Length: 314
Image: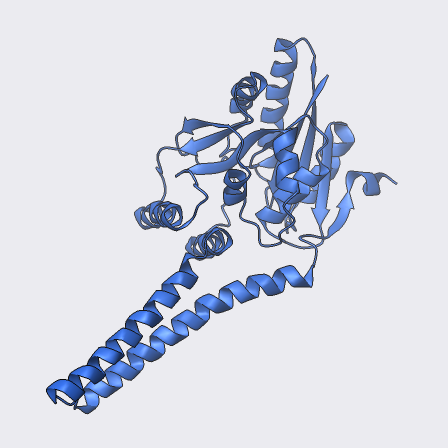
């Protein structure tokens, strides 16, 4: 028997959960029938501090189906923490991560399993080839993010790559060996290496409920990725400092040699504001890296578990 761990981060998914559960059970039953009951499944739902009836539904599902496990956080720690908790809880020979809103179609899991089972690939992942339904501005910034990070980072992140991934235990263990607190999973999946097969998919709308992602959260998440997998911003600050030093030296030399003094109050104010702005920018970039170091040094856990199906049943 091979065990497949299905990891599902959940945040306010009370409307999507019943639909997702029916779909994933149908996929699991179909795979068992195809492979003569040689596969076993565990469904690991991670409740990331939901404020609706998500936890109540998970309790009921775990009572009806012994394959259902759940981890409930003490508060909202974010999707990165939820994925980490699911991977740490997983026991399977393979692990698959997907969202509960059915934007990651469970029907693709059998195809992913075939690619990984063949031994040619260690991971199968989906990649969006279109962004239908997204605001044009959001799509533009998303594509710009991938261009920027791939130009300044040694870790290549595939444009449109999603968190929907089917991985071997070896790859899961490699991911769990990275103890960092500031996690950017898209970068981590690429950094650990391993051969990955990308399945191209169209953008899929949520089955139910509303997304909690907005432009602000996505922008901050993109900055997290840049600071986690590139030191280029520090180099940019250094280069800007050198450029302004050279400009200042050139102006002094011009004044001494050519006798053309710089005059004018507006010019002075503009230069002070410009240089002051550059200094604040550089300090802000350095501060971001220092804040990441501060977070790592504190050593706080990535999440706190309040309840699981085991503690509930005692």
